[in-house]
Amino acid sequence: MLLWWLCRVDGSTGQVPDSVHYTAEDRAVFDRYVQAMQTKRTLPQGELIIETAQFFLGTPYVASTLEKEPERLVVNLREMDCTTLVETCMALAHTVKSATPSFETFCRHLRQIRYRDGVIRDYTDRLHYFSDWICENERKGLIRDVTRQIGGKPHRITVSFMSTHPESYRQLKSHPRQVEVIREKEKEISARRGYALISEASVAACGDRMKNGDIVCFVTRIEGLDISHLGFIYRKGNVVRFIHASSSAKKVIVEPRSLTQYVADIRTHTGLMIVRPEEQREKEQ
Image (cartoon, rainbow, N blue to C red; front, side):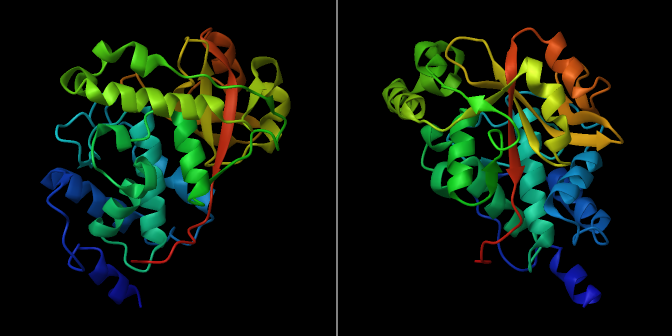
C-alpha cells in the first residue's frame, strides 16, 4: 500500500491545466512536502496543518504573488504572504489525506478554497475579503467559524475598501467595469449577520478553547476593511502563539510573542475571529 501511494505523488495521475501558473521549483517543493508527510497524513486535520505550516518555516514573505493577468490559479510554494500561507497549508493538508495526493489534486483543492464556487472567470471571482472567504468556505464544509462558540460576541462587518480605492488594485485600474461587481459583492458581505469577535480584552480568557491549526484572523480598525492578517494557532504548553508569514520578519515564523501580547502590541487590531479547518469529506473527482 505504501508503494502504491508513493507512485501516485509524482503527478502522473492527470494533467495540470494550462491555466495554472507554477514553476518547476514549486512542483519540487510539493514533492518534498508529500514525502515529508508520509508518516503524518493520518494526523487530525489541525495537527496536520501545523506540521504543514512548520514545513514552510523560513519561506520568504512576498506580497502580491497572485496578481497575474488574466486571472488564473497561481501556485507559489517558494514565497508567501499571510493569506497564501493559510490557503496553501489547507490545500496541502487536504491533498495529503486524499486517495490521490498528486499535484493536480492539490491545484483542485487550492482553487476550491481561493475562489467563489471554485470557479475562475476573472479577478472578481477571487475571495478578496477574508470574511467572505470564511462565509464561502464554511458553506463548502471546509472550515467552521468557532468565534462565538469559544467566547466571541456579535460583530458587524462593513467592507468597502476595494471599491473606494480601485487605484490600489492593478486589475481594477485595468478593468474599471469590475469595480461595480466588487461594490455589489461588498454590499452583500456587509449585509450578512452572524459574525462574532473576540475582543482584545478577551483573548487571554478564550485562549484555552483555541486549538492547534485554528486559523486566527486579526480584525482591523482600518475603515472599509475586515481582516488584515492571518495565521495558525500554535500551542506550546500553556502558551498560545501562532505561525504566520510575517511582513516584518520577511519570512514564515512562529511568532515569538504570545497571541495576547501580539494583539495588544498591534494597535490597528480590534480583536480576533477564529476559524477551524474541518476534516476532509469531499469526494475525489
